[in-house]
Structure formats: C-alpha cells, structure tokens
Image 1: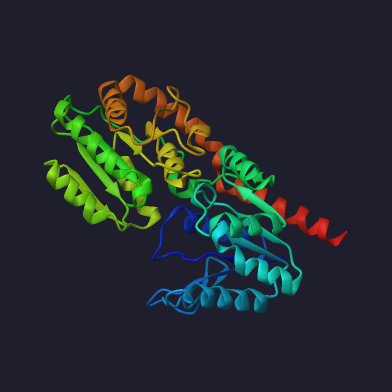
Image 2: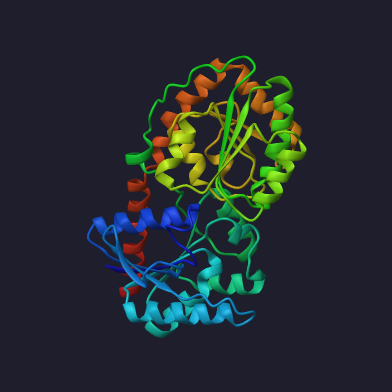
Amino acid sequence: MRVAIFLTQFLPRFVGGTEIATAQLAKRLATRGHDVHVVTGRDPGLPRRSSEDGYLVYRIPRPFIPLIGTGLFWFGAFLHLSLIRPDLVHIQDIGNGVPGLMTKAVLGKPLVVWAQGSDVYSPPLGERVSRWIVTRCDEIVTLSGSMSQVVERRWRRRSTVVPNGVDFSEYGPTAVSHPIPAPDAGTIVYVGGLRAIKGVSFLIAAFAEVKKIRPKARLILVGDGKERAELETQSFQLRLRDSVDFVGRVENSLVKRYLDISDVFAFPSLSEGLPIALLEAMARGLPIVATRVGGVPEVVSDGVNGTLVEPGDKSMLARALLELLENPEMGGAMRDENLSKVRRYSWDRIVTEIEHLYAALLKRRST
C-alpha cells in the first residue's frame, strides 16, 4: 500500500505530539512493507527530499506572504501528494485538510483525517471550512472519546477513536528508582510547548505556592514556544528564577532524562487531545497531576494513577502537587498503576489499528 501523509511541520525542528506521532506511524508502516511518503513544510538547512527510517520525506516551501502564503503552500502540497500517486492520503490535523480534499477530487483516492486536538476544540479554519473537510473525508480519526463526542456534536460526523502511543523501545515501561525527596525539596517536571493554551503560567504560579512549603523544590520545563519570554519574566517576578529550569526544546529520545530525575509530572493544559508527553511520563513511572480536559481523564483516573485538577485553578494545582510530594506512598502506588496502565498504548498496537482502518477503507472503495 502506498500512503501519502501530509502535515504542516515535522521533525527535527518541530518536536510536538503531532510530529512524533507522524514519525512513529510512518516508520512502523514502512517496517511492515508499506510505501510511505511524508509531505511537509521545509525548514532552513534541511533537504527537499530525504529518507528517514524507511520512508521518504518531501519538504516544500512555506511562503510567509500575508493572505496568499497558505494558499501557495497548500497548492504545493497538493502537487506533491498527486505526484506520489498514493493508494490513500492521510492528513494530520483537520486544519491541513484542504490539500487532501484537492488530491481526493483529482485522483479519486480515499482520504483519512486524524484530528489532533486544537483542530477540534478551537478549529483554526473556522466552523464552515472545518465542517467541509470533516464531512467530505472518507474517515475521521480522533484521539479520545471526548474528542469523538465533540466531532459528532459539532459536525454530525462519527469518528474512529485511535489514541496516541508510546515508543517502548525508548520509554519502557520502566520502573525507575525515585528516591523519596527531602522534606523541603522535590522536583516537578513539565514537558510540552510554552504556549498560552498549555497553561504553564498557572503551573509557575502554583509552584510559587509549593515553594512556600518546600523551599528547595525545583520545577523543570522541557519545551519551547512563543510564551517563553513571558514565562521567564513571571518566574523572575515571583522570585523563582533560580528554582525554575527552562530547558528548551530537546530531542524526544532525551526527554526521559528529565522525567527520571523528577518526582511528579505536571500537565496544566487548558485544552488537549491525548498528549504523548503524558503517556511517556506514565511509562517512566511518574505520578501525574493534570487538568481535567479533553482525553486526559481517559488515561488519568483521579486518585488512582494521578490527580486531576480544574484548568486554570492555580490553588488546586498547588495543593495537588504538594499532596504528592508529601505523600511518597501515594506516589508509589500511582507509579505502579501507571506502569501497568500504559502498556495498552504501545505504538505497534496503535499502528495496527490504523493499518486495519486503511485496509477496510480501501476494501470498501473497491466494492
């Protein structure tokens, strides 16, 4: 089967959940004998065409021209998708669906759209264009039951739920030894983008409350984004600059180093699909404090393998973090639960579900 996948940005410059999921999908499909082609935007210093883990990557120019730049990029993507002559087109994110629909119209090939989160909860193209894409693709895939319900309510379209996964060759599940922190210490880690929607400002504010009780506590922020300068300023104003480590963007394979030196994983997002970073933290045996948004409650059971808090509530977040730091027995029980629960999120299992979806779709189209 020849599969063409399109997304706006890709590894190695961009290391978000969509990019990681795409690389895992492409690599594992290629390993199973499929002919996989990824079309994405071109970043400086990277070749127009390269081979990565058995699949081909085509990087096309993204003109940053007001109004017409996106249209030119989409048209370039459509040309590349068409020249690949795929059996099936797979689009990552509803917001990238226009080139896929153009390719479907010209080649008559089936189109799969895998929604990623914000494209459902806050559609970047607006209701009308998003509805057009969702209702005209051949299959819409969502990351969680919560996201599936929103798609059905908003666009009257049923979807197939396929979650994100974990690369167990990199992340375990592994029972990493976590010494009990000193009474006045403890390390909290966050992994993700530094954007307003991720709620990191609330985490920093909550950490200020934690520091009043545990003055030697540390907060590690792994990731980057356009809000970084504001967050650094916030840390300085709260007199936390020496206690908050802004690590910046790192390769996904290196993230586990920061997970393994931490006591609690915090995920304060205001809107979310099903974050890979959360699953990776579970695979390293970390207890979780996360917001009750999107698909998060489908993997984090409050009081069982983590603690759920309301988005934007810094006081509730601070109390939850302190509770785990001050109760190592609770954290240990959550650790064991996460190591067990995360096994169902193997990327091999996830890709098998996508592969079966492709095969069923092609079979329907041929009859």
